[in-house]
Length: 238
Image (cartoon, rainbow, N blue to C red; front, top):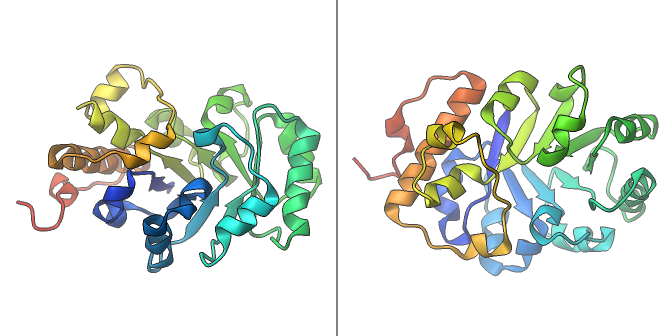
């Protein structure tokens, strides 16, 4: 079963907390007091700290990731990466994370090709992740079930590949457009990158309920679980 984490606007962290299988935290947001307090009081949910490249399009440093992790005790940390880096730079970034105190068990290395996977495997990297836009470039016979998926392309990909985990904000973003998950699929799953401004949005009650319904349907569709739509209603709603 694939675990899911959903990025949501900061004003609505608690309203989606119960639907999070784990928390996928964005490093650039950890400077926000409200966000940091939410992560510190997360209960028993596993925390993965991301390097925020997808949102900022700027590579973070190992030291910036260490600073972002202070006081949060993440189980995993995504090693800094960039679309402009080659395999050597990716491995160098991973090694810099080791040098400042992260362990092999804590670091997840993003990879963008089968070549990078082989190099990482030979370098004894234990955990890897693949950004959504690069996954079509990998061979069909790939060990998908050992990967974290950075972003959602479409539910069918999850059902076929069965990754360990996937983080996404798509169920929320399409709710902001008034779309159900099925409407998004019928539109061929258009992707929308998550800009930093997304996290300052204030959602209406209707958008919150639609986003929750989208999340539950995504989980059911990908993991073939049955769930009732009533569970998507915020506490206290009929």
